[in-house]
Length: 66
Image (tube, rainbow, N blue to C red):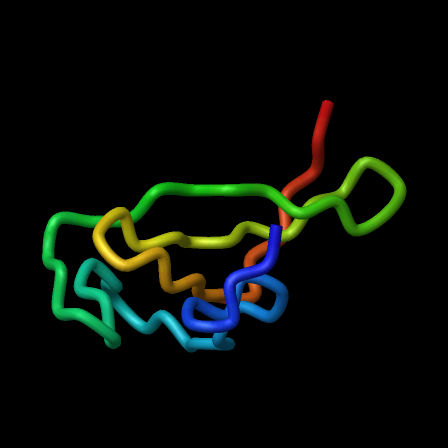
């Protein structure tokens, strides 16, 4: 499912220095839902999703799935 208003296909790339808990689009301040997008070889990219407006952010974090 694609939602052009939220950038569902292409999360906005962000840099997290200390903390990222406020949505840049709608101002929601209570944190994010987390999703994982498969990359390859049991690795996945972490996607942060605002529970209020659905805006998606890609902090560049990758995890290994075991």
